[in-house]
Image 1: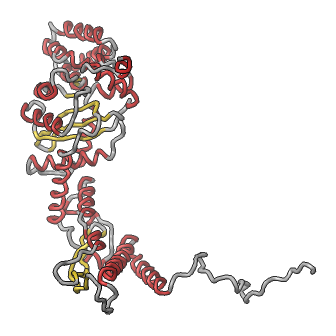
Image 2 (image 1 turned 45 degrees about the vertical axis):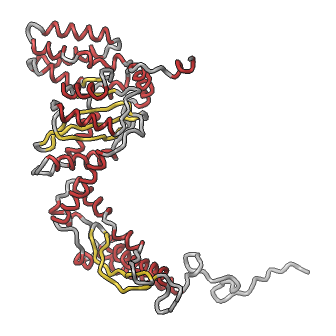
Length: 445
């Protein structure tokens, strides 16, 4: 039979009549009921687009939320108007409720369901998910820390449509303030309750900072992989024995383990040094911040002499051999003794603890990380920046709440410490410092 070039029959459009009709998108057609609902949502979306994308999305979101609640009611109590003796729940009308959308609390009509015997209310998982206040509190804290005042909170929200705004609640100054206080109180509790025994901390930074008229002491840890973790905060100064002892003791009680060695980097407060010794023992390695020491020394010198003194101090600390470094510092102190006795005393005070990193054999990038309290001071600067618009600090509790919220917000911006690749060297040096055998020594034994 000769080969035929005949084409199968087709309609006037040229489409194969045997081929199922597809939508213009190339997908199978939607069922009629679902298609009409989608078209309705699209129409509502288009209607509100003139007020902005979020306004259109919220309008559709309210409709979809109502459909989800209705579908859950049907699942629990069966189809409406159809008797079922085996049902375990029944419809029980509707009542007013609220949900969180677009940073606001919006009133909605929510259906109610009760057990078939009428003894108990059956919760709707869909409504509980929408009504949760966590998202609202998170938005309030984020906007307030970013500098938006409680008075102007509503003005900082994206438009969600005139109709929704008219019914919105929870955006007044008092409501926002109450939620902020509650949320930041939760953050303070979270920070002060963090378990510390699940991670290996190699470094603990302790430093004081100011929030308004209130002095606080913060703690920042560095884990074995170089991650920075805010650990705690207390009201007071690094010279207050009770405050710093309470803070350091709390770290230990939450699981901070110094048995394998931890390097404490501090600003030089004597009470802080005594607290570390009292809680973790005389063997706990302490590094005095060299930047603080530089200021302590140069404050006793005329302005013209300060640049040369900074170069001499830094040259001495740059000597890897701790014996030679100490000798160089002693030469500096002797040179100051006659003309600048205050400067000489400042050099000698805590001199050995400015060389702890030298004795541990730390060099390179990690040395720049460990020789000062700069890492925790950077965190404190972020905390203060979040609170820059606060004009009146009502109490120390308020300062603590803001500090905790700022620390946890700063944690999301942290990078690993500079020189984190050298941290295994620090870990081994700390083990030697506390008298623990090294891994190779254990293998030989």
